[in-house]
Image 1: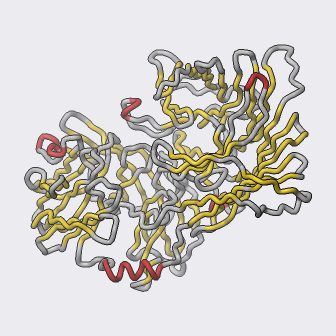
Image 2 (image 1 turned 180 degrees about the horizontal axis):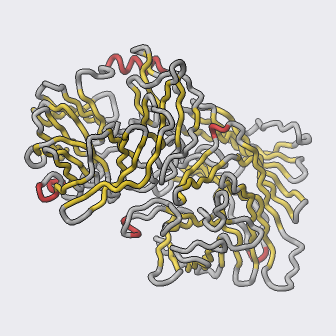
Length: 624
């Protein structure tokens, strides 16, 4: 399935904001309340990347010296799932995390494996000052970031970061005893995956302290409490301060636990999200409640997941309730199959035999276009999706193709087309302003694989020319792709079954070989200026032979997982083995789906939630 692009055929779920003026959620545990006019403050904005953002600030009393936490509930239309459900997060919860090495920052492509990892502060990459343990942010905010207790190759239990800002603040990450601010899994306390903010101090010693709840069994960490209006000076009187407490509930359905797997040597390293934030308490000291924010959820969507539905503010004595802000979601609905079936039947032959069809974004407008051809015929066509009910049709070539592939080989954001025919010719086509152009002459050979095998952002091509495999690296010059000088010998490819995927968490596409019960993962590496080879990095063995297997990202962590359909002679079972970057989990997750789905199936993100879904045809005509 390596030549099939993921087609997002459904609308992304989104929310509508409704500020309720007269209706509020009745909470039985509370006493009678007076609802006052107005609503919670909130701000709607657009992020630099074009995402819709809605922010609800958490109102806090001002701390000593103006040192007050800046907390808010924030929705981002491009964000994933977390402690507040789809799209929502708690702003003001800061951390430094490990990130994968990249060609741009580090001169090499890697994944998070606790060896020479990069670091990021709230998603912004940290740049090391040469020959030091000092970092700065990629977009320089004039902050000095010091890594204490470790170099990039060292592993010690007492590692932390200190961020010194231009305003004179010192922010400590993973540093303060008793804060439980270093996030790790299992026995790997010396190897945190994140260092969370646990202390902020100004020039006068005024400070904010952050405390966490941690469960190493699942690599979990949650912000539990913030204390502020205290002073760090020796002998300071800290009896008068404010506290912000966070309440959570367990996510009872295991299917909605969020698990991310990483590689730690030969072992899997994980961290989960298994709780939902349900309330925020603002107190004077530790007991006098000033105000409380209630956060409620509703279930919906295809799978019945939880979505944030309401935020309500009540006074400390629970006598006053402010008008809540209510959120109504438009879900992706999968049970409107009748309308989709009519569309397919009326407009597109499905499954499409005898025509070849692939999708590709050949003009870079973000919409999938259709490339089609009839084996044995002469016409290779492109149907350009105009976003309405019509298409623009281009004829690429009179070529009689038997295989179609696509990829962005020159990194301009537009896919090019590779077509192969029965005569052993390969043509390369690119859309320009006035139509498609065939790039260069026909290549004699066949196409084996297409993908970004070196992780540089350009798709590459592996061809078979006679008995030799050739590696053609993509570059900004599309005319160089299939040029003889760019076709390097690739060693180590045999007559086995191969699949492609992003298995390690890096930007480098991997090649998975099956030999009997064993899967072996390879990456393409250069041997010399003229030769490349396949380097094995990990293996996985099936305990029993699967009826079929494939790969998709079933937990949304950016790594392709292994899915296998088994048949024991009477029943089918489906199991997922999650990728952790250097292998697949040995114990498979049983999907509790005992039906056959292996006929005319695709693994795609059908409802645009970041998780691969199984789409298949049963009984010859029913789309599941």
